[in-house]
Length: 471
Image 1: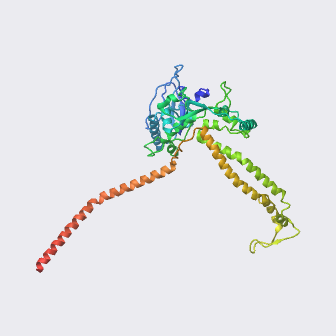
Image 2: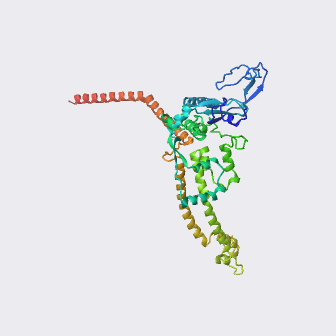
């Protein structure tokens, strides 16, 4: 296997990037090395035993000992059904334009991997369908602040410099040049600065596009409208995930650290707890949804600092005034010898009030006159937090070009879909049974109807005869 981390993220040809990976489990098989004259024996899902030719080394052209593969344990009928579902689902993915490569390594581990790649035609089509905003060639310069506001911002920036993460994208945030963004359209490719079609869409966008295709691809064997989520819930696939951009440990390459290494060094480790979050890099690597979540978490954690300081002050105030608290002094004074009534009938004895001294002192630490001030402060803090987050969210929406974007509709859970499907099937089955019962008894009803008509005719005829006799 090639040890170059950049080639690990591509197909076997080393050019097409792996955008998504599907994992499924298959029955473990024992392999026995045979002589060069032996053929490969493998059991396929339909039960056949194809005999292959001898394997040859592509480089040297030498014959290699073939491998005899034998199933371990009795076959499971559900495995054959899952194989057919996977074949149909992967065929539908190919019809949608995705390119698929099956894993040919680590066959002894019982897990197989399917690599997916989205070519430019699929990316451009889905980006236009999802209305993904991308930067255009048009840019503009932001107006520089002057006067007292510029001086205060520069001083505040210098004070915060030790707490800022050392990320190149953080410097781009403070640049004065901004590029206009527009929803991607295949008819307006001249508006976008497309240097390379392979790198025009970042990894987060590519993964989002492939996941949307996986989520809406249907499979008729499962009778579901959903795709990969239902198949994972039913055990057809074990997992589906995109790949990272490489290892998070520095590799010593000349081109510098990748985004994952920067996030690990400046964000995802305990040594960087005092630094601000690189939300722009988080958004670039994980997408807008996760970037907004961590931005909210950063604002919440930042505003918890004054609340924690006030809470500590209130606690220490209670600890300092516990000796002057009259109720706790009376309870802890053993000389007064307050005798209390039993807490229960017959089984409990009288007890002294001084035995609750520890509980009284502990309650004063958290329930003292300063607690009223803390409650008022927390109500004002909650309102301030909401307003501060609204302002931060609007700022991020503007800088990330999220204004005017529609909220994604959440798809129903696979378990709910399964229950709904079973209910529809039962209703359809009951309706079919009723129709069959109706068709079964329909001739009998026709006979009864004919007999009743003939009986009524006989009664009418007998009535006329009786009238004629009486006359």
